[in-house]
Amino acid sequence: MAFENLPSDWSTRPLDDVTLCHDVVDLCVSFQDRASSSMLTLYADEHDVPIGAPVLVAGVEWGCASAERREAVDLMTGMGPPAVLFGISSRTPIPEPTAQRWLEEAERACRAAEVRLLGFYSVDMEGIRQLSAVPSS
Image (cartoon, rainbow, N blue to C red; front, top):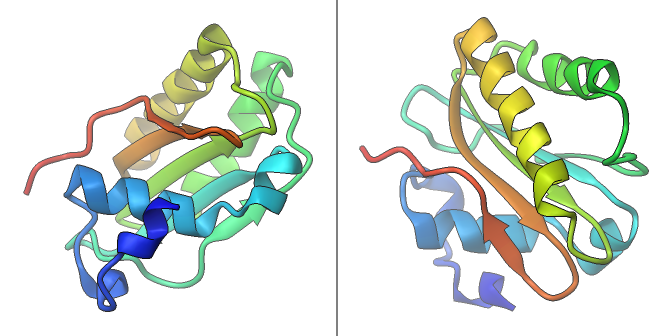
């Protein structure tokens, strides 16, 4: 587990470090969440420091129609945070084209809502793939 490497003050650090983001996603998306096809949304402040509790929505159908993807991502970015980090999870790896469609939708929604996208990850029982760059500070 990568989250075992997290510093004790991880929740006060900006999410601008690739290793930190990877470990935070690993902590936030448990094996049960992965088995439940959950979407992680972690909000951050204007300094990219996590705020509030992570939001996990289970039972997401990753192969859904584009309108459903748009609705889900718009809802999560529409909360008005300065920045957001996303993770999509499944028991087995999400096919690359499907994960890319979700990433593109997240990028679109963040631009529309003027929210910085801090990272986008695909998570399964075997590991975590970073699909977008983490902004540098």
